[in-house]
Every structure is written in structure tokens, then in C-alpha cells.
Length: 385
Length: 136
Image (tube, rainbow over all chains, first blue to last red; front, side, top):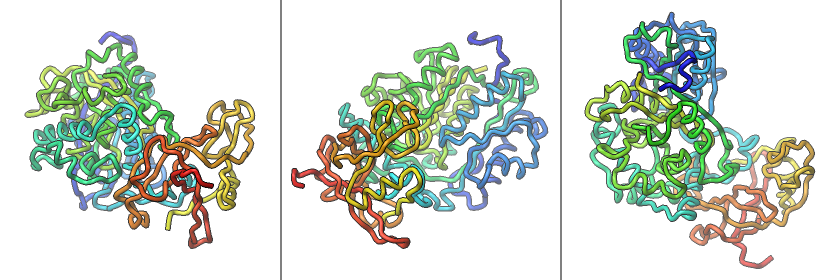
């Protein structure tokens, strides 16, 4: 990649998950400590090398401060940007900018959640500020918001439940190849299984929805000056862009188009690459409809053509355009803010470490996080170093 | 019992209107577009002068869902329909569509029909909608 070759480049070095699934032995902080230790070790670096910390978890007041204290770190750069599940793609962009500017050399990005153990999904406080115009109506969130988008997408484009189900089927096929996936041993899924799983909020069925698991992760980013010291092949951050279009679904400008329509093309432009160059997709899959709308919004196909794009296992193992090769939020893990796991899998694929599910010749990945209720998007282009 | 809204300095006139059976919205004094939810700045042009007016309380279903699962007290009410309603004045809002959920469809005409609840901190009204059968 020659675009912007004169800038000080940034790369993802070590990546790691914490224990996944159900983790009553963990707190949100111990999960992140476990993942951070592993990711730094994989990098060939130590906590003493870290000069920037990025966190987006919901661990009380001022998460980066709480995390730094727990780890015993005093860093020079703290970033607590929280834009939902896409926060970690934003963190990569922010860290790359700080590295490029010469402000930091080694950034640690962490996330943890014990929502499955805590049974905290759906817990909500009083209906204040904007939420006073949604919460009183009792819609289960976030699934209800995605259902509103899916219903409109079906109305506008004739998208069907069968077509959405294909996304869950391909995710499961990948999970069967990933020993860390929650559904690794669950066997294949069929379109009929998805349709028979019962409505949560029409038109979305239970198996159109992501898992509810515990889990954490960490990503280490390093300035090019330090790449020679690394114990792992660096994965270069070639481009990044982020945006938000709304916070609540009733404020979404067009309920069938996400902010990826803005962040996707901008990230590709900054990386100096085009859609056709991408070998691997890591697309936030909180719900099947999230994937469909994101692919359209990113510009991989036209609005309304997302169903054809994913049809017939095209994004599954052996397919034309591999997507969510870890099994995704639908079949691997989803602890609430999933974006860090997109980065972890993309980095491993680009390093060629994925065993049975390795995508041959994967050199360029597009990672797209989606946060809130289709509210924020953050797109990162990663290249094999 | 629904989660009660917590009215504030921006939104109190709206909730007082609902309690009186009226749908009160804001309009930007600069770009003249309708604004919902109520706020101190126009989200269309960032103008800082907005005025309240009383809307017709009618609109069209832009999209909807029927919830078969829900959290808290709403779980006792499934299945129920929630829609994004495009109000005739140009703003969009979320609400319940009461009555048979199977009767709701995209493009259906709806009319506000507020319902009042007795909360722990007093009564409150929500601007529910129903399919507009043409009656008053």
C-alpha cells in the first residue's frame, strides 16, 4: 500500500480474547486484564511499554480511569470514546491518528463484559432525556429497533425472512470451524431452523439475533518504529473513518441506510483501495439485518441487493467473499459491544493463523463496527504487513 | 404499567399537551421544519429559535414491529405493536399502535388516542395511536 506512505504508520500487533461464554469467575476488569496480558505477550511487549489506554466498557464512572487503576498503569493518553459496539474500531482510528502524530507509540485497547452471568441485558433506568420518547412504549431494545429497520427494508425491497436467515446459516458454518465459538459444537443451522425459532420482534426471529455471552478482548497497537521489536507480524491500519447518524431509532434519518454509507467509502479512500480489493469482511452482526444493511451501505452492493450478496453461502466457508469467519456475534460470542472481536479475527486471518477456517491469501480486510441501534459506524481497513 | 416518561425543561409542554389530549410539537422559526422530540435547538438547521404548536395528531405508519418478547411489565402485554409514525406535519415519532397488532401495516393511517396510567409518582398519559377508522 502506498497511500500516505510518508506518515508514521500504525499496526495491530498482539490480539487476544479473555475467557468467553459464561464466566462467573471473572469481573469486567479481570477479563480485560487477562486479555491485555495475553495480547501484550503475543506482541512481545510488556505493560511498561503501554503509553495509551482505550476502553469503552460500562464499568462505572470513567472506564479508562478504572481500568488504568486496576492494571496499575499511569499512561499518557486515555480515550473512553463510547459509541456502542463500534467503539473499538473508533479506538483503532484514534490510536492510529495519535501514533501518526507522534503522540504515542504503544496503545492498549480493552473490553470486557459479564452480561450473561449478570443477566443484565435489557436492564434500563428511568426514561429521561431522549429515552422518554421511546422507553415508555415497551419495545425490547436493541432488537425492537432492528426489527423496525428490517420491516421497512422488507417493505421497500421485498427482502424476505428466508434471505435474512442465510446470514445466520453462514455464521454458523464458520462457527463449526472455530473451537472458541459458542456454537462450535451445535451443528449446522438451516434456514428453516431460523424461521422456526419464534419471533422476538417481527420480522426478527430468535436466531436472527446475536448471542448473549460474557467475554472480553484486547488489541495492542504499535508505531512503525517499534515493529522490528515485535514477536508477531504487524497488521497495518491503512484507513479509518467513523460517524453517527442518531442515538435512538426514531431519529434515524433513513431506517434502511446506516452511517457505513459515509464511513465505509471514506475509510477505503484513506486506505487507497477499492471494494474489489477486499479479501475478507468483518461486519458487525448483532442481528441478521445489521449485516444486510451494512453491506448495502458500505457499497458492496446496491440498496436492496444485500440479500443476493449473501445468498447461497457466498459469505460462508469456501464462498466468494468470506465474512465473519469466527462465527460472528450470531454464533461465536457477543458480550454486548462486539466490535473488538471483529478486529481480533481480522488480525488473525491476515496473519494466516486461523487453521481450519483460514482464508487463503487474505491480504486486505474491511472491518465495520455498528453501535447502538444502527446508530454509529466505524470502518477500519487492515492490510497484511 | 409502562415506564413513565420523565418530563424536563425541554419537554414539559409536550407531556402537558398529551395529558390534555393534544399533540404539541415544535417548529423552527428559521427553517420552518417541524421538530420532534422537543429541544432547544433545531436539529435541521441548528437555529436557536423554536416555537410550540398543536399538531393534528394524525399520521402514517412508516414502519412497525410486533413485539413477542419484552422486558419488565411490557412482557405481560405481548404481542403488541410499536411503530414509527410520520406525523402529517413532517416529524417522526415512536408510539404504540393499540388494538389488534395484525391490523397494523406500513402506510396505515393512524390517529393519536392517549391513554392514562396511574404511576407510583402520580398519573401520566402516553400518546398512543390507533388505526384511523375515519371516526373522530
